[in-house]
Structures are given as C-alpha cells and as structure tokens.
Image (tube, rainbow, N blue to C red; front, side, top):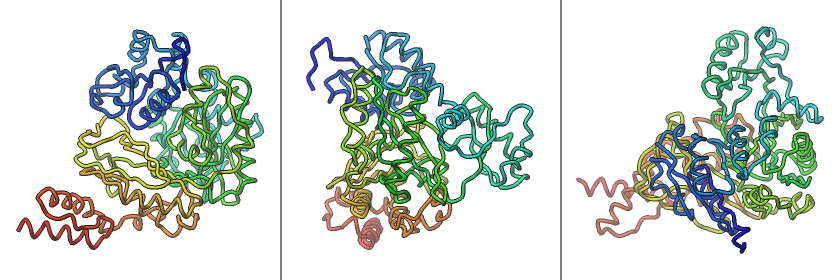
Length: 500
C-alpha cells in the first residue's frame, strides 16, 4: 500500500524475536516505516534486519531494556515515533505503558488503557463477564478476613489457586485436599507478589477433563466488533500452551457461535477497540465458562489468520490509527480448512523444560505446501538467557485436520536446530499420539501421557544429524536420508568408525 508522506507513519515495535519480526513485516507491508529496538543481547538479532531503523534501548536484562518504559519513551520521542506496537509479553498488557504512550501524543496499538485495566485483574474480569451475562467458573476471592479452608470447602475440592494479576501459570496451583491447601496458599501468595507485585489470590472450582478454548476478537473505534473461529489450546505444559489448532475437535459450530457471541458481550461491556482474545474453559459436559481476556495479539494468532485469510496484526494497526474494519461476521463464521501451530522453544523437555541457551551452529528451516514459519532465529544467533526461549512457531494449514497434521509432522521432521535442545521432537510425539490424532485430548494430556511422549531413541538424533553434516564437510558422500531412523543410526555408527 502506498501512503503519501503525510499519511505514512513511523511505528516502533517495543519487542524482540519472532513477534517483532511478524509486526515489523506488517508495518512495512502497510506502507509505514518500521522501527525496531534492541538490547545488548540483541545487537545481532534477526529482528533488526526486518526494520527500516533500529535503536538501542539498554542492557541485556529485560528490566533495563524491553521493560524500561522511560527509556523506550525517550527513544520514541527522540526519533519522532507516531505509534508503538507492544507485541505480546514484556509491556504488552501494562496499563501504565499504554497511558504514557498516549499521553506522549503517540498511538498505542492496542485497546484503550481503561479497557486493559478493567480486565487486567482476573477477579475484576470475572465480575465484568458475570455482569455481561457470561457464565463464570464458581470461585471465591480471598480477602484479609477470609478463611481459606472454609472458602475451599464451600467450593468443594479439588480447587485451583490463582493469582488475581497473574498469567502464564505463575501463582497457579491445584489443591485436592485441606492439607495441600494449607501448604500452598502462602506459596501462591508469595509467587503472585514476586511475579506481579500483587499477592491477591482467589480460588476456582477445578473442572474435570477441561478444554481450553479461546475466541479471537477484533473491534474498531466505530462500534464494529467481530469474533473469529475458536482456537483449541488444551495442549499445555505448566499451564502454557505449546500446540494450538482451529477449528476445535471438541465443540461444534453452534457451540462455537455461542462462545463467540459471549466473547463479544464481554468486550462490548468494556468498550474494547483492538485485537484481543477472550478465553474460556469447557468442561466434560461441553458447558463453557469465562476465563480471562488477553488485551494483546496472541502467540497463536497465525492459526486464526490461516483459516480466515485475515491479517490480524495489520488490522490491529489500522484500527489503532482510526480505520474501520472492512469485513463482516458472516465472512468469519466458517473456517477455511484446518490449521495447527507448534511452538518451538529452546528448552529441554526431558529435564522439566529448562531453557537451553547458547549459539545456534546449524539452522535448517522447513518448507512445503501449507507451511508457515514465524521465527526469530538463524545460524550463528545466540539464544540469550534473559528472555523467553521461544524460537519460532511452525504453522501447518490443510484442507482438513488430517492433511494439516501430516504437513506439520513433515515440517517438524525437516526442522533442525543444533546443538540446542528444543521441543521439536517432543511436539512430534504429541501430534502422532493416538489420542491427539483422534482429537480426544484435554488440558491434562501431557501430564497423563508424559512418559509416552519421550522416545528413548530421540536423544541421539540431533547428534546423528550433526554427524551427517560433519561427514559431508569432510568429503564423504551425502547418502543418508535424515527422515529415516535406521539411516540415522548408521550415520552415527559411520562417524564412530571414522573416529576409530
């Protein structure tokens, strides 16, 4: 799109990694000027190559760079920035940051700060949903005079302890009896205080065999608000999603419509005017309950883009700068095929998903029909210790679920990142598990099948692949097929023989 000089905007992305790249691309495709920021750890980060301009904001620690509001605003003012997109994580849902951006006469690419405040606290958000007539999970807030044992007994065990200001599973604990309750209440409060500077916790009734389903919404400043086909996000580790798909195998189109309409009730209650996500829990009897609102673009937004053809990030930017949405609800109701996303982290699944940081010596990305890769890494890039270790998202689109699953598995088998530990093999084992293939899974899937998701032979595969390329560099013929386990074993044996 071509803009005149007076229409062309200078938009800064207050983030890093794969999401910064995604947003920088959208800004440039819209015809605006894309501005990046970076810390000491990110001086050579791939996201900088997608920007028209890039500016230093501080030391490697997030608190001194990507979380440093004063420094980011200083850089933005100095370089005459028109708007700031926060991405996800870091300051994306920070009401203070949004307020400062707007008071500095810049456009905040997100909802109004008041809307963010209204649903930023989970207890307050529950009351808003209830007021809008949307069902909520039975729960109770722990005030200063509330007896935790009485509150828990009133709900009935098992319960879930949650941080009011929380997210990402922090401060969240399952409690199945009174003894566990006493042991975990204080711990949960301390985690909440440490992570969110707010020790407030509340109890929710724990749903049996639950599904985590979310509804993408998009609203403009002219009263237009729409919901998108649901995303199934029940494959989680430590309450964090790692595989998402759309449409869900759990609910039908009528249920999806009911949840979409409920999501719109919630966001209209707070005059929401941006991209966002309303999250729900669905019990084993297919009853749904409001969970929370995420007032930002989601990690898993590509799944929705792939089955609707709508660029959510571009629309989010356009809405922020005062444009109206150009589609309607009818065009969104029926998913176009099926899409699945796998989040690839630099983590060691065998060792409780501890981060695997360091330099990437070999980076081979997947290709193929229906494959999309949103990544933020490359050969030679070092995964820093200071930030979330997400490397990329692999998204597979197909005419149906079977085809998208096949394409995703093929793509992951072609994706090699060495020598770091990653979640690639772990996710491959998830998506080829019989329960997942049938679509019969809930949020307990990983816990129930944990041991079965690790293949004892997986450990040598990265080594064998490394051997393959090492032998090739030494003049040996490239006769090995990396997709076959037996040939990988032969490759490993070949190197062993070669080294004597």
